[in-house]
Image 1 (cartoon, one colour):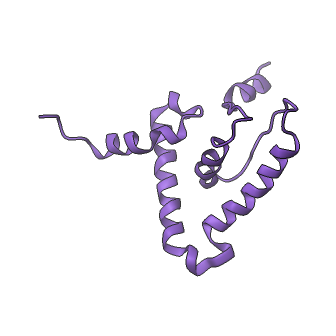
Image 2: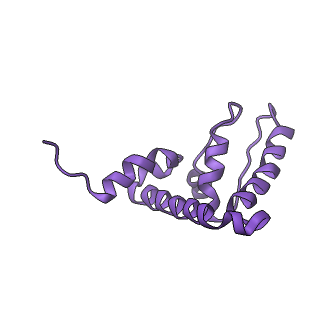
Length: 118
């Protein structure tokens, strides 16, 4: 019989793959992102209907529309984009970005490291 699966391992196996854009080198960080995403999805499920356009899913859809328009405007130009939004938006944006076949997701850490180098 297989050993019981801990809550932590269960969380990691169910949600870890959604956050492999650099966090995969740090499983604890990836787990925190996954847990954060679960909280935001729960918030949306519980409150979006009452909040209407101010609900979590509506806000993400609005932000994503601007991001997508920018990506579409520069399709095929081999340019880089840096998206800076609050941590809660990471999950929804990554899910949308991964649907596109015209971009490559990069971890920002190496670029920031180069800026900090003497």
